[in-house]
Image 1 (cartoon, rainbow, N blue to C red):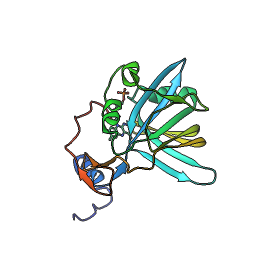
Image 2: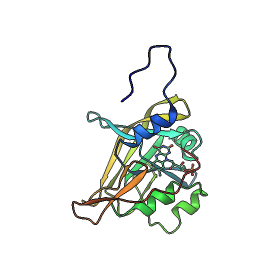
Image 3: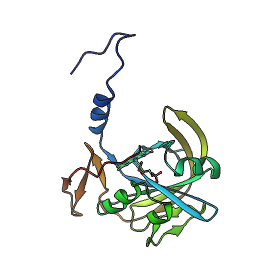
Image 4: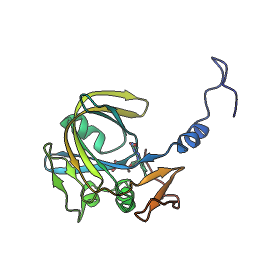
Length: 185
Ligand SMILES: Cc1cc2nc3c(=O)[nH]c(=O)nc-3n(C[C@H](O)[C@H](O)[C@H](O)COP(=O)(O)O)c2cc1C
């Protein structure tokens, strides 16, 4: 491991930062929003439970993502937690597609906020934006949870080292091949 740089020294190498963060395993979610009858959504692993009382979450979205300004305006979003067998949904929502394409053929449900709740997930939550903060090329949304929708009790889809770890539904996880490169995020 390299020594910490002296204050005022060279900034950390972004490639090394990216690789190190890739060692941090996460779940995978699809964040959805709805405006004027149109659904939007994207794959997100920068999702965090911040506090239990009141239930509060945080998401970090690229300014480039189509969903980011919509959440900024509508002040609501849903987080859909993907199950081990939903890699296809993660890949679909990580593509830059017209929003209607992303939702094509998906039998979504509606909760309190109108945001799409995706089928067959581990569960979904809906949140109202309580605070937001622009950091570098991302916007952080702190959401107060307004509704919970528990789903299937099966293993999660996991992301680690730029790959999905998949399960056959038992306790065994297998590291899959790298996903197709994304143009954003
Ligand atoms: C596993 C995974 C996790 C991702 N996590 C995030 C994230 O936390 N925030 C973000 O802005 N983009 C994230 N992305 C990238 C977006 O899903 C991607 O840029 C997507 O194309 C954005 O949708 P849009 O192009 O329709 O706006 C992630 C992609 C993958 C594959």
